[in-house]
Length: 478
Ligand code: UDP
Image (cartoon, helix red, strand yellow):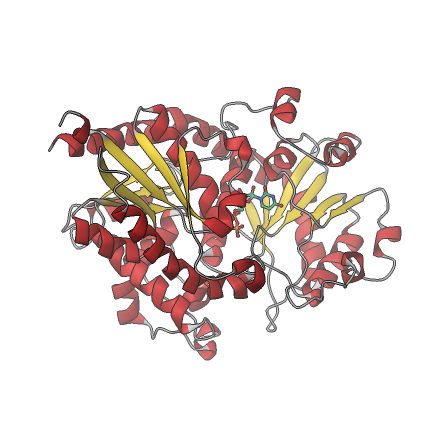
């Protein structure tokens, strides 16, 4: 009987890198407070759990229903959408896990990724709390929670003609500026597969039902947004409390500002060439370019970036993911314009494999980050005081771009043409701005936010995490 009152968190991330990393970090924090925590991940994504996070709790792999190796779900956005089905498959495996009676010695509750709406049905069925983990910005959370009010303002799914409507603006409480239709998450667009859109819409509508929402942001970073979310009675009729506990980062980078040899040792960097090359560059001179773990740029966009970089004359370290439609035999380097590497020799470092992003952002030679605005990338940039060139690709990245450029003022948006591609002149302009004339101003702002992040990690976010843990513990005894 005594044992049965132990709270036991079952943490379920959406099976993608940008969700797994912060969820595991949250799981680590729960463990550190003595809360029993099991991390439950789809089998085909288990390899995405970074060993550097040193999670000491139990990890359970949910068996996959289909042979995902054959289906190649690991590739780009298209595949991620396809894997929306495989995400549904997780439901059955998870239900079986619960039926197996392995958790009967404790009072289980769910900490489920926002994008796993089926966990809500399960929580209701077995009468346990479901906490939602929202791994993105509070701005994206607001848009998700206010979806019904959005739908009253604009037709969803958004047609492509709506995206170019310059006269339509959308009001979301707590957001300092009105939004354009093109700022809204890509799942709301007509060209997103209906199944993925339905999952996303369902996930948004279920937010208000959650026992609590845990966000990977901090209150100082998006203050008006958090205030509106917390005070709006319409949202809080269920008394869903929102806990901002971020930034949840891959390593304890928040409080160790300098890149040091100890960190290098802890990080299994297979290619020390990165750091060796960065070591040869001057302070804050290198532009780091990466579009995260999912987005795959078209060959056209890769070429425009290459030409823009070449013309900018600034040093760069570029992580390129192969476009999905490139055949395996396509040599990675053939994606680049002819002679590009010879012409940029010495000032450009290119890799086609996974790169240790936090290490790169922590190196003193790194001075700018050309990013797709994945929320983890944004938080990592903030925690290293690095200014940003923003070229959002999908998901809620356009919203994150607004946060970075309009609210935090640590970056410059790279404007796309009508074909959705950012041209070489625009890229050259943005690189020169961030790495040159506007760099000092942006870096100053970024370092102010870095200080704010550090303060939050021992201040507001630490306090919120503590009250989250209190809520969890009191649940166990009620
Ligand atoms: N990341 C990395 N190396 C890479 C690509 C990505 O370490 O080559 C990490 C990055 O540091 C971040 C996460 O993977 O923690 C990507 O999450 P984000 O939200 O930025 O983008 P997503 O991949 O979800 O689009």
